View 1 (spheres, rainbow, N blue to C red):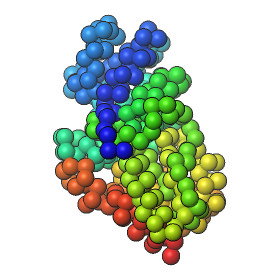
View 2: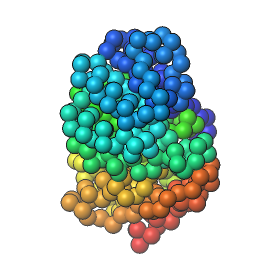
View 3: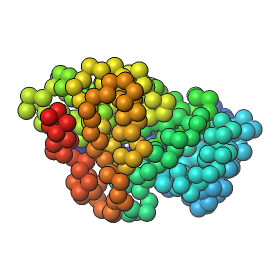
View 4: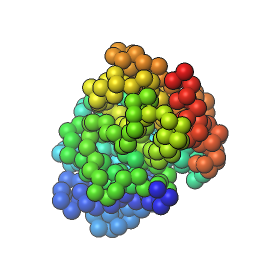
Length: 312
């Protein structure tokens, strides 16, 4: 788990894999070539690379226009810019028209805080984009899953948003682990006291929390939610209905993110006690991932505290 790879480079690898098989695959960049190390793609497929410069709204519109002609554009920018600066174009042009555009948002969450600081961290992107009809939202948990998520997204009809990170993410799955759009998956489990729901590159934190819970004799299941929209409501319902309580963990604001999504299901079905670990409706500071996770409670120890609290 200590070895790290780059979710950003994984996007470039996925682009190359797709482009070799499908001549409709194109790359739209708003000064994003260096972000995902896509120089090889730009050199190999110059006629399938569009660079708009730092003009995210224009880039989103460009991707929409390309998709309307039958091309399959992948637009890469930072999560904060895809969900905010180009929000209207994403909603009203891409999603309203249900176009085959894949948008990749890098620097999702506080794990990217060391590189460019709080202005470039996307901590509200999922909350904003969950409200857009027609949009599929994927949050892979390591670099290999990012590459596979991109390949899977390109095969879908309709717009897709893929949340990626800073480029320094821990390995979580093996290279052989598939990525399937839709269902939640149980990572581990030793009892039904608590259901721990997580997503993205902090999944190893949940595993560490699981080890601490096991030492305390608390039964738990760790559930990964790689598809936030459309949500696997039936799968989550089954887990909630067979658990005493639930805790969600996310590198994102708890307002409108994974916690809110699980709570929506919980209140309509199981109605068990639950707590949310994540950014508690504040603007985080800049800093290293470790510093920020410690300050805002995305740690194994805080997860255990939330579990013990909700079980009481």
